[in-house]
Length: 249
Ligand code: SAM
Image (cartoon, rainbow, N blue to C red; front, top):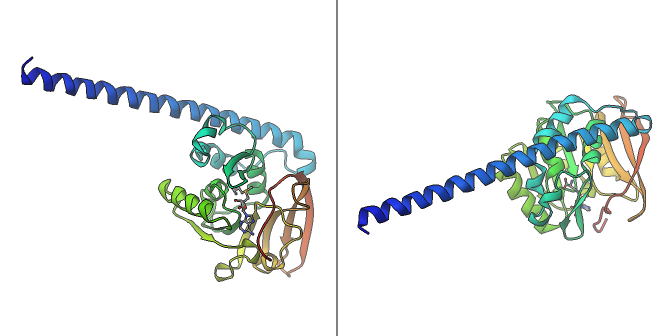
């Protein structure tokens, strides 16, 4: 075979390989998009089922648009990607989980996000909740206590272009005083009590959602509202199960 034929054949082989790879990637993307649409429908169904307790039969459209657009499979370990759009929490390593999509949507809806809002999240985990918030508010500050999770989430959020999310390694029990007051606070790990620092860092008129209760028991998801006069009102929304808020506090 002359040299020209050899080059021609190897180029053709590379072209076929690349075309096949891009076809497989596009087919994967299409499957994820279909799975994501099914997840959104499932969240809507859950919202209707639980509406009497949560006071919310249907979540706000922007919240659902964010749930429909963020690629949850990017936030779960490779071995779990095929379950990424099931309506359940999944392990992300270090004994931690990415929360159930319905709970992420509910907590996001309860804080009534606005495009001017500055939001604090405690418990970055995979970065998924921060990504959902990122598409709805001006900026998100998020704190994670486990170093490798904080590092992975920081890299992931950067790679995926969630530029208005700022991450930090630390104990979220104390909040993030430099960026306070916050329009809303989302706590994604269960506390034994409502951390007073977080209440202090909530602006008047602000909202906080936080699971409160014992370790690895059913907890209550609380909605805490600070009125314009600084009065704090608390409502129990729904029973939930979250991993515990840890730290030396
Ligand atoms: N929001 C996460 C997501 O979207 O993947 C899921 C959060 S997971 C249910 C709870 C997270 O809170 C874990 O990653 C855990 O390490 C973190 N955490 C627990 N105690 C914390 C604390 N005191 N400060 C900051 N993060 C904490």
